[in-house]
Image (tube, rainbow, N blue to C red; front, top):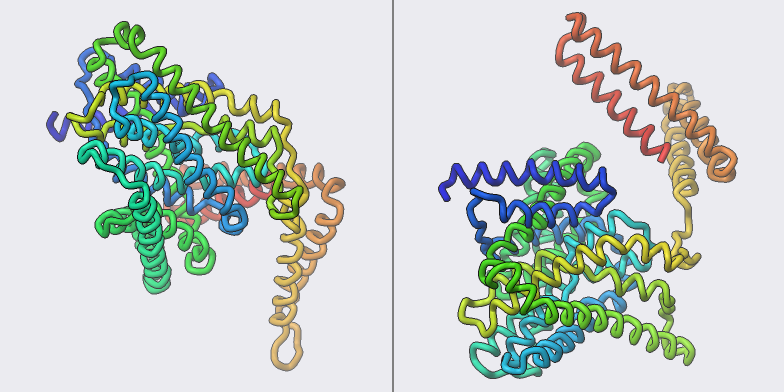
Length: 527
């Protein structure tokens, strides 16, 4: 395939993404399901060339920016608070699941070497950051479960990648040392965190000096790949490096980025990540054709692989539930003995946490990266695809109903000490105090009376609203409905003046930007 045809295929893929997202919205389906099914359908379209996915390229292109985006949007304070639970899922659950899947695979195929069984376990054990985001953005969870799932999806890829590489090396050499594997794992993780910290600190200092918002957005976009590639070049965990860089960047972005940079960067990044995430699911669907052809067609695959695939899926689900409920039992026992301050998440929370383990891009890339002469490579590929499709189609589509059934309630200890209204009131009071000090000149003469009055009126109204939110909320909605209507009327008149030749393009753009900011502010306040 030449470069022109490849570019045409990429444009066609983006058009398919838009169409499939629209279709998913109309049908009430998770977008990941529609994209996966659409990609699989396109893969078998007559006249379309077979798509060969380079797994290393997939990891390098898609994983770093999506990891950085996850780290950028995560609540750092809650991440630190729940790090023990996150580590239990990201390391303990991945290791336990790998062992369980290896045992089940060996029972299904006794001739399959243990190293190959372990490789399959490492491939399917880590839930995927992309898939988790695609599922979690459609549901509402208590803060603790949300941070556990987000933190797990950020960090468990490193565990799965390390286990996979050890399993492949063991299959090639015939030797495996658990002690060496554990030591290397911590060395890779520590080295990745160190590399990520250095890149993050350099970014903070670099951004302070750049000044130009477009250069800052471009530099931040490259940040993910710089951190990941540098970590891999130094033979440490690129995943941990990228996540660490993202956490440092998100902690400092409030102080080093201007308002214009944040607004423009957020808009660009949202579209960029949307296309990246959607492309991953399309590529997974497109890659299905090669697996089906290698397996002898759908009929042959269904006859020979359906039962093993079902067994692997069930084992995967049982292993995750066993680890989560086992951890829950340990926490309950320790809490009753006064040995732990961590509270149990409850039966409903454990069920939701267990059901949310959806697999995706990392599983795909690891399976496809197996050497061509790897033992039972085709069997492992089919199992990996079955796990991806099964978890996305079954767990991804039903997670919302499972959450509703669980009846999860946010506990008081998980809530912030201040509500949004209270925080806004505190901010408004400080702003009013600052304006009051600056509203007078050195001789004590009031030089900004209207500004002082406006900030005083605003602070009083916000404090009053924070004290009586329930009473004022209907009036607040009506107020901003009027604001939005006024913005719409103003924009209509602005366009009429431009079309009539009364104002030029520059005036149109400047005044339209003011209306856009007013509209966004009203929508945000109303929400």
